[in-house]
Amino acid sequence: MSLASKVLQGDRLALSRLLTQIENDTPEGRSAYAELFPHTGNAHLIGVTGAPGTGKSSLVNQLARYYRNPADGARHQQRVAVVAVDPTSPFSGGAIMGDRIRMRDLAGDTGVFIRSMASRGALGGLAKTTASVVMAFDAAGYEVVFIETVGAGQVEVDIARLAHTTLVIDAPGLGDDVQAIKAGILEIADVLVVNKADRPGAEQTARALRNMLNLAGPTARPHFYAGGGLFPDATPPGPDRDADGDQREPWSPPVHLTIATKGEGIPELVKIIEEHDHYLQETGELERRERARLRSDLENHLREALVARWRSGVSGEAYMAALDRVMARKISPRQAAAELLNGAALL
Ligand SMILES: Nc1nc2c(ncn2[C@@H]2O[C@H](COP(=O)(O)OP(=O)(O)OP(=O)(O)O)[C@@H](O)[C@H]2O)c(=O)[nH]1
Ligand SMILES: [Mg+2]
Image 1 (cartoon, rainbow, N blue to C red):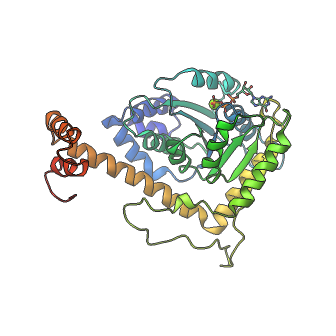
Image 2 (cartoon, protein in one colour; image 1 turned 45 degrees about the horizontal axis):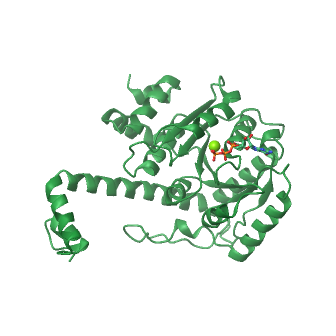
Image 3 (cartoon, helix red, strand yellow; image 1 turned 120 degrees about the vertical axis):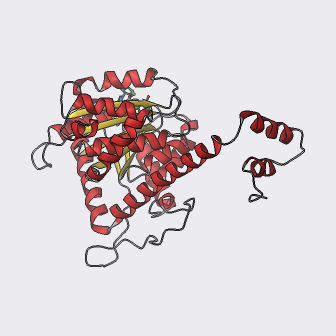
């Protein structure tokens, strides 16, 4: 039986092996992934991002527990996967060890699968690898997939684009350096969570976030549709419409307070996530996000394949010689690129 068939049958060991194959980008991983792809598209992907130490892992832990044991009135018990991405760490370092400990109480539950990923050698491909890992969980029948990233840069934003619903986590009492991080990730937030509400200043933090949101206005996730694609998409984003075609109020990200260490505010947060899910489905936004997500995955693969194809046809010496000539100001970087591509197309 193929690795993919085993994964589809719920074989955890096979899934674990597949994830390693995907991370190492092996031929076996690629073919298994291709076999699994038609089975994807069912999971709700929830991005959890925010400055270091705001309590993302603690929150994911609590949310996962809730989805495993829903209170009355919530949806049925769901299978939960967690992908913890640490783009800064070249190895599975401290943060990930910490995650393992914080998520320890989920261990032993076969309805939960936790995977930590570090950038390791991933040649600029962390977003691509994460996308494949997430889709493997989707195919394997995990209904909720959390993607935890430390929100700091473009990689995180790229990874956040994988999610249907993105939670941006904040906490009171963070330094000024964190404010800049916050501004950058605010625009990808569907829900803002002020965690550590047991600490002084939580209300002020929530108020400051509301002010920032009001200033920004209903941006409707511009990053999703902003250029950068290889071709313009034939279906531009329309205004949000409900099932009858009436224009709808755009989603305005709620600001919600939690205390992850005590599990406070978790059922309400799940309710907000479910409301956002309904909103996405009713307005067609889910399909637009899916399209943007798959498109970005497609383009990541294209870029990588093109670079690999080019690289196999050029020698290291030629490359270094071109760089030396650029250093000596004999040719411009653009001219060097054109030469290395054996053409004048770039000139
Ligand atoms: N007082 C208080 N502490 C909390 C709360 N939530 C998390 N913490 C603590 O904050 C610290 C960081 O929590 P994590 O869940 O690891 O935070 P994180 O955002 O995942 O951290 P990184 O992944 O390293 O960026 C831990 O010591 C937690 O116990 C909370 O609601 N209140
Ligand atoms: Mg963490």
